[in-house]
Image 1: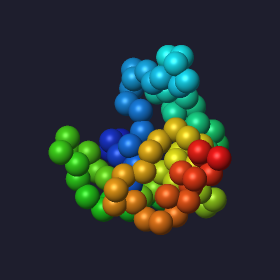
Image 2 (image 1 turned 120 degrees about the horizontal axis):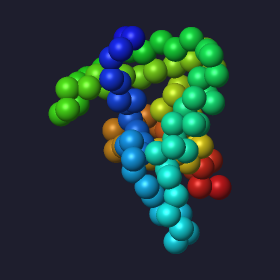
Image 3 (image 1 turned 120 degrees about the vertical axis):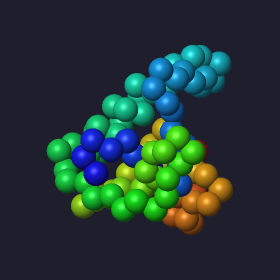
Image 4 (image 1 turned 135 degrees about the vertical axis):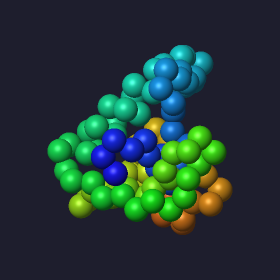
Length: 99
């Protein structure tokens, strides 16, 4: 899927140039999410399975390194939220993020 814009399945993560509010303080959540994703990848190979196309024409895919499901790991790190159709494991990751 090189060169393809992919939206990770089952999550909503910050868009480019989006800011967020954490405990009354604005922060660059877009940069934090990008940095965290880069950290998770850390040179590992990634395999993606496309499961849908979103309204913007992007592939919606489940992507996995040998160690992590990328979307679930972003949720666990508190840098994405789960969507209503997310598998059980994503909800468990959200509980870790909120602990």
